[in-house]
Length: 204
Length: 204
DNA sequence: GTCTATAGCTGGATAGAC
DNA sequence: GTCTATCCAGCTATAGAC
Image (cartoon, rainbow over all chains, first blue to last red; front, side):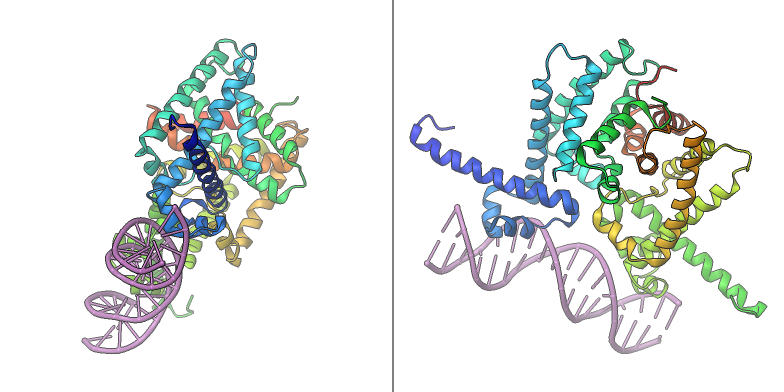
């Protein structure tokens, strides 16, 4: 952020390295989860030593928080890209599709569905909380609009829809399908979208 | 299992103590998850020392496996209780309802949705795997029957339905509703059942 | 800034007395 | 079988040399 052109190289390099660290963190988190991820895992994966890692992020909590924040920023950006003429339900579907694709390509699930402790840890990260709240209010509005238009069930409480929507972004069925079925990524995504909106009953 | 009446008292007492240990294990697992659960947690909760705990279960993996096995046995028993005249879809709904009620009352989620490592650990427990396979084959049959009858979407792959069904038993939306909504247990259960079978769209 | 080395702690598992 | 006391591995985080 220097006003001198000279330093922006350094800043850029710094940013690149941080991005590489966050990539590695994301990968380890996706495969082992927070509790089993060690700082050595991350450091070794990018070929630096643990103390160097601590120069960039002052704690494990801080590091994981940064990875989650980057994910939320991606979601936010994705949401902003959607054309204005798109209906609210289609916007929700498109964002879910994006989240599932990220996961299927080795990224993180949107929410730490897993553990209470992880959730609480993230909630102590004010920067993370701010981004969650921002995204949440956008999504809540979309759900309400969709309900008014009859695109989503108007008789269902908004929070039931919203939380169930979040839950689909980290649905374990995705992992099972990826492991035990012959389906490809895109087919898994389209099936999950269908299950989410239509349920298990509907005859098409 | 002695053939002498005398010893059955001892056996019964032993069984009771093991049940108490498994209750405690279940409670700790439900609140902290596998990785953060310590043997001290369990031992302290029932007022015995760690070595005593190890007399009953030879490792943490063994202990958690036993708790999961007891849960699966409960599910199996529940399934067996359902009247024969009940349709396959209603049976699936009734079992899901039971699983959600167990969870809302502080029990364990059906699947270890969370972690890869936990799943692999359980898969090394042959007794657990046997029970999973047995339950799975029953549920798969029910899904197929329901699809034939048109009670569940016949055009959807059976494994998509089955895995999504499993996923609903550990749906994080339940936790969020319990924490952030004013809904009671029974209302949460009925809403989750509706979301599962009807999806987020359907107008009732 | 990067490393090697290590402090400090926690938690699984066990030895050995009673 | 129950305990106290302890071992040992692995992890977060840091000290201190270069």
